[in-house]
Image 1 (tube, rainbow, N blue to C red):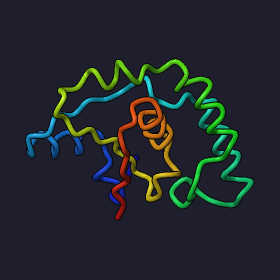
Image 2 (image 1 turned 180 degrees about the vertical axis):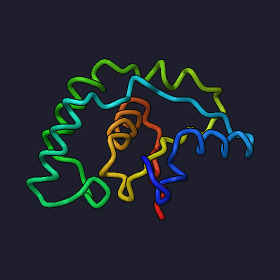
Image 3 (image 1 turned 135 degrees about the vertical axis):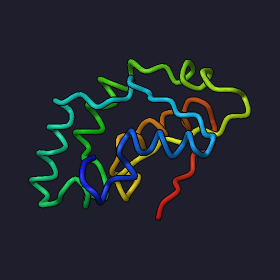
Length: 123
């Protein structure tokens, strides 16, 4: 994200703030949304007359494509096992509504496969 409104979501600023707080940061590149799947959501947003920062949910087409192309290739077990047993893991989203972010799909997959309860922390 770019611009002063999203300074907190800038990767460098976020990592610096976390480091200052003594919080470890890890980037899970396997969850990145491919451009062609981003385009699916952009089209759905355009058709619904909403912007990326104002949408409340992801389209079914996006969720299906992301599940088939990204989540199906992602190992929840490897992800979970990469952290210490006492770790608290946070998936950071810049969207106001968790359901408008692809990380909510990853969180749901973690919850489904591990039984761990997932909580959204929203403003």
